[in-house]
Length: 362
Image (cartoon, rainbow, N blue to C red):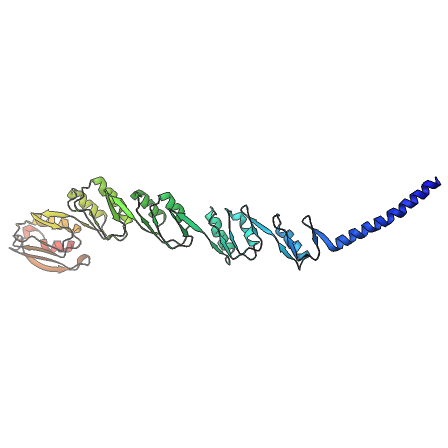
């Protein structure tokens, strides 16, 4: 028993220095080092590299406060793509509005290419959230890519859906030139209605003819047209914002159809060749001469009926027509129109002065 006691004491004497050494080693270790996110780090470390790990903003701030003199490196993940926390310029993957707070963690960020983002509302939200950061993107259309802040672009033929998708990502776009367009008038009209502030320049195909949308005069002279073609033309007129006239001479349309079309578009000169009492004239005429044509008061009434379709008419000559005489000028409807006539005066049975009546209509 006594021998066992001695052995136990010797063991304690041997263990005690070991324990002291271990405690000293542990004390020295924690005096020199610490754990940072599971990694041994010296208290005097100049750099603490946390890249490749998911570090919350709160944890990062805690680490920075523990190591005020250290350069802390970390990653920020946005939309599944990681960036160095000190990045000044990044090219993002796709992201959503909920990812925007992560961008704010990039304290040195000056520029972000967000072309890969499919949610344009998230792009706009990022611009609003970080006005000091240049947020930019490109928009593919056809074989080209356009800057997201473009105000005017020109592209070769593209479908209506492609144009629609591109325009929604180009908030400053005001002019779009489409060359070699194969869009139907219906597609073009739909786009102009959907984007009313946009100026489109493209070719419009009507009745087998290709017409630039910026023309001032639509000329279908000699082109066979049907009533259906005329209806299509009428519907497509909003595509021609600069149009002042349309020529429909020798198109095979009836007088009734032409007058209806003209009446439906009072701000547009509808030009065609017509005739009254053997006198042929254009509806764009400034003067019509019925001299030496025998006329009655009823005939003069037909002339009066035609006047609304003659917006440029300034003078009607009715010399030696056998229905009266007169010479007058009237500023009616903003124009000064002259009616000249010579012959026996009208009697009471002929009703009101034909010349005066024509002038009042003009």
